[in-house]
Length: 467
Image 1 (cartoon, rainbow, N blue to C red):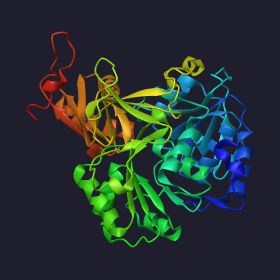
Image 2: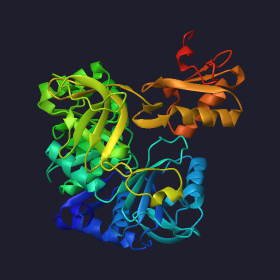
Image 3: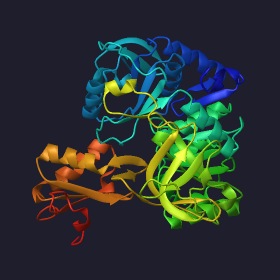
Image 4: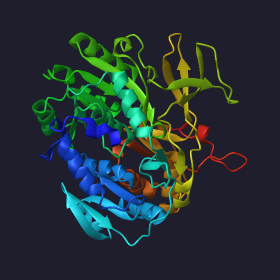
């Protein structure tokens, strides 16, 4: 069975969620199989995910019955959902009860607060190895998906579990959404070893979150940079959390200051701080830094996970063999997915990457073989760990407001340049709603004209010089 769930102790607690559900491995298997068999094998289901038991059981059940899920946030923008639906024409939706009225389809089954809706769309052929689809462009409306093949998820679950040393005694706090590759990885790795997954929809700033993880004795937490910024504001170091032993980080780059703060906190308190790095294209994590090096190698993402290999290439695509070097970071391993899809016909494609992925990140390798991300080749940002395409954001704003627009920024903030003062607030509200991200992660600048080079392309280097 998927993730070897049938080999776990049937009476062991598998899942707890903040909505009040508790399931053993035996119950999780039964519920999952009951859900999965209600959908026709080799069909497509859109899963509108929440960190709740119903969402998780559906995901497992569909994969077990060879139904292909596309995982999306239950809070996805409705226009974006409609566009994806038109592009990929799913045969089913697996949605929270409160979302049923928003989606066209016949309710044919319900369980754990979720409902399976059957549409009028006809089943169409996929590649035989296709197992899962995930978005890769944040929530800016791109139809671009990552195609997971059978074996990717389980290979990553196994090797990440080995790297962390997880056992069935863990009680993993899953705060990151399961539609997000890192959140799903937390779930998979812990179910793989027979541990307990603590799903929560509580906000990190809410007392309910802390009451929940204390009551359920959470032993490890995986967060993105924004999570650790919140921890710092809440004076996490003063909290009494005796069961929490491992703090893991991924989904973006911490500032050196924040990295050092938590590395030192862990060292002094006898806990583990483990930085990691991953991408949707590699089934989440591809590297990690051992906890005993976190105070020595500030900013490092460490080395490849078991069965994986990190390496650097130069601008011509040649492998760089020098021990200490800098170039584009690439990865080989069994967790590398098959490639992208931008239309339903692409779901028939085979494995285009053959186990090797070029990340587009520039990195430095030190004398101990540890890697440090130094920049990014392509035009996207990771805002709160969600990848948001700059080109896609420009297109959305330009089309909506019929104006010229240019987007730049860092992983801390997107800068949006327009030429219409009257639209400044409208643009800010629009992009915040489209991405589902906070308004303070964007800043709109009004300039006289968008600078362009001789060929008419936007000259991004000129932007911001007069800010």
